[in-house]
Figure 1 (cartoon, rainbow, N blue to C red):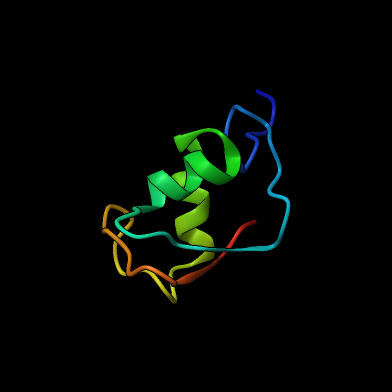
Figure 2: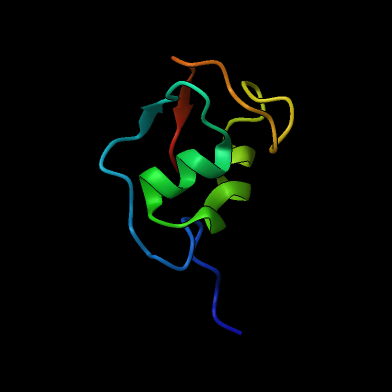
Length: 68
């Protein structure tokens, strides 16, 4: 089985190593905006567990997330 792309099946790398959370966004929303796919939500959460309590939480606007 080939290795899984950490940023989802869209295969789009983020332009920057960090991104700011917009008002009312969840990790799935950020993954969709940054990577073009919500499949990257788990990778995004694993990279930001020190900043995000739950992967399904709505995040405070302005939170800075690492984009692996």
